[in-house]
Each structure stands twice: as structure tokens, then as C-alpha cells.
Image (cartoon, rainbow, N blue to C red; front, side, top):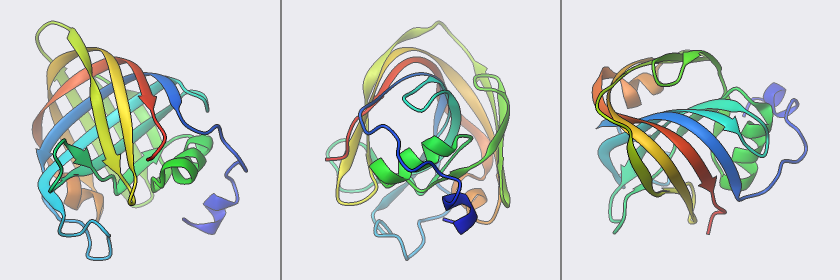
Length: 199
């Protein structure tokens, strides 16, 4: 993390679990590039990436927006993602993600609306996501598991979602390699999300 960003972070943030109200667009796609050899998960990922843009309407650190990309890991009974890229527009969220979940959060600016068209921009990268929902809203409930180190975190979502086509255009040396550009199947969701402690 750049020293100038570290100097701006709060000293503390509420610990897990984080109970949040969210709107999000989530999609699955083939991963154009593997993780770098320096990652502890290099060679352990499937060629599939989970991408998402999330609008946190409420959270323990206030409202904020987030974009992330996470490839699925091999050798797990249930789906587990590793998140090498995640950016938010909230300094308290950067601190909380790094301190409590070992997430490599950085800062970004966001324009547009999650669920229709949104763009996230950071230093040397950008990702634009356009969504076309189709069909009725359906109940949505289930866990998502992530691994950043030797521990795993469970994120549970309970709400409603609509199937969607998600158009992604990413640029930047690293992010462009992980997300690239294209149309992918996804879902537009809203509801309650609880991010548990890593175990």
C-alpha cells in the first residue's frame, strides 16, 4: 500500500461480522490471465473469475461502493474465491478490509448506477460494467466463501435477484488481464449481506 494512502486511513474500524444492506451486480467469466507467481494461490485457481460491483447502502463504516475480481480455487468441495483485486471509495472500508480480512483494498472513484451502468476508476486502471436484467426477481440466498490466507471467510446474502447479461470493459496492465472485455451471465441482486470473521 502506498505510504500516502496508509497515512490517510483511520486507526481502527469495527471488527466482523459486518451486517450490510447492498445492491450488486455479480457475474462469472473465464479468467484471461492466471495469478502472478508471487501469489500463494498461484497454480491453484480455476480459469474462472467471479466479478462484482457492490453498492453498500449501509455498513458498519457507512455507505460505499466496491468492485472486485476473484478467481475460483481448485481442490475445494464448495466454491471458494481468492480476491487479488478489490477497490472501494471509502477509506474506512480500505482499513477494515485490510485489517480484518487481509483483502488488498485500494481506492477508486465510481460514477453511474449499479444495476444499469457503472464505471470504477483507479490509478492506472478502469472497469466499466453495463447490465441488462431479464426475467422476474427471484429469491436469492446462499453463502460465498473466500480465502486470502490460510483462513476462510463466509459471506452470506439473503435477498432477491434478476438474471442479467453483464457487459464488462476493463483496462490496466493487471486488471485488464484478469477481467478483459466481454459479455457474461450474471445477476442483479439486492438484500442483506453479512461478512463473517475469517476462520
